[in-house]
Image (spheres, rainbow, N blue to C red):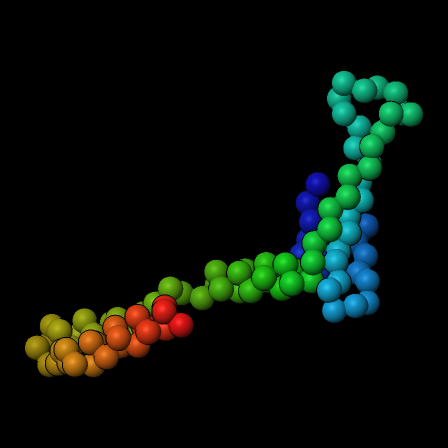
Length: 105
């Protein structure tokens, strides 16, 4: 069974409630392979919160963004090759300090 979190076609069986903590419910009848009789079917239910759907969408969008700025890397390579790139150790140290402070907050 596949679940479409992004409201694309092929999402039959999904329903949303109206409150802010909406959940999406999927119900499917499952028949174990060792049970051949119709009377012994089970219903499986999966509930996915609205927040989980948003998180899944955010992760999908983030996957499309490069991990680094390729243009910036290329310009730095050119500067390093030319010998014009200036390293500012004070600026780097300040950024490390801000990062460490943010981790402790």
